[in-house]
Figure 1 (tube, helix red, strand yellow):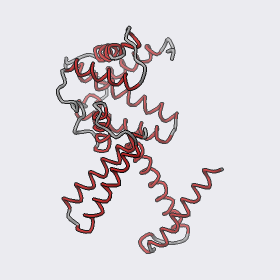
Figure 2 (cartoon, rainbow, N blue to C red):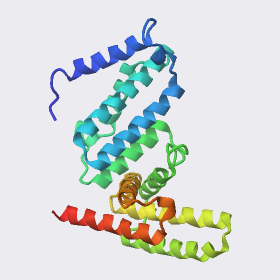
Figure 3 (tube, one colour):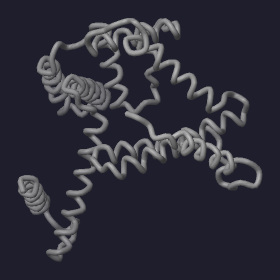
Figure 4 (tube, rainbow, N blue to C red):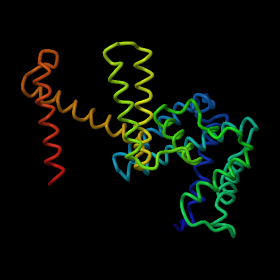
Length: 267
């Protein structure tokens, strides 16, 4: 992709805007922020970006990418003020990393598959960082669903994986049976353990099918939110209150909403 000549100038302008907001006489709110408080907004913007991607709304993706970029620059500005590092150093480091870890593009080494690219990437990463633990770098602070995906993917790079999603699904069925077996007991410890195993195995089925489980669940959450609001609107239209209606009635309306969605998707 060929970049327009003014991209660098636009980025420079963003850097200057953030610096102006942070300097004496700038914005009081922006000046109060530190690396910890800004992370709350950083993560919020990342999740809003993920939501836009799931919805397939290109204009929203462009907007949210801008917000995420702004948070990146803001965080770098905070550390630059501390004398820790500069934004230029951040950019230089990632530029060098991308070149070093793609010798098949920027060097003489040749690879023939994506698998080989990943293997080479991990070898170079391990050498650069002197990594002893192959799972190092997967933060325990990562959302659990995505963390499970990353753990499975990292283990797969060492050959510890199911050959196919279908074989991984067999493991999921085993975990489901174990979960169902302890369900009647009501034993919280056992239920949590088996539920965790079930979630983890299902995440790996998704991974092997190229599905991002975090985005998939977000999509399901959004679908539930939309349908539930439609359910409440329909109850209101019928002059009914949610707490005064049987589950059977609400289930029936829910099914009508689903059927309407399917019919609309065919049009």
